[in-house]
Image 1 (tube, one colour):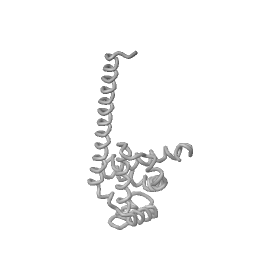
Image 2 (image 1 turned 30 degrees about the horizontal axis):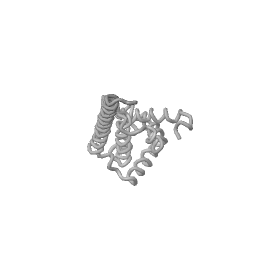
Image 3 (image 1 turned 60 degrees about the vertical axis):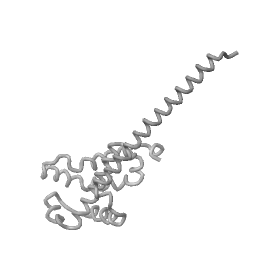
Image 4 (image 1 turned 90 degrees about the horizontal axis):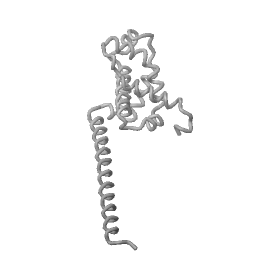
Amino acid sequence: MLRVVDLTEISAVLAAAGVLAGVIYYILDIRHQSKLRQTESLFKLSPWFNVNAREMQEAITSTCSIEYKNYEDYIRKYLGRPEHMSMKIIGNYFEGIGILVKKKLVDAEIVHSFWGAIIISSWEQIKPMITDMRTDSDDPNMYIFWEYLYNEMKKKEQQPASKTA
């Protein structure tokens, strides 16, 4: 037979468990809201996220069709031309996505599913020029998050299909 004291103790434990569950939920919600604010801030700070689908498709097509022998050849042919702006559009767009992935504000798997092949092919085509741009501008971190994003997409490509599906 249960004593009154036992029922009181059980109800106190249940009440404490309820309070603990509420505190845990509140902490998780605060963390989630913080991530949302960080993501929103990045979108507000970066004009590159405001590119529409048509502009992005044109930028990708233009960037992936440029031909150059080296950085000097690229500068001579494309500086000040639409192709150079297209490269900046996709570079800065993927730089922003790279920041989101690095800070775990966006899942790399989702980005891979949507942009993986384009990120990989565009980086591989542009990498030699970016390497020279880093040297020329004395900025070793230029497009560092695009490079990070490329490396993450390559890792996803190496995973078995069952893990990435």
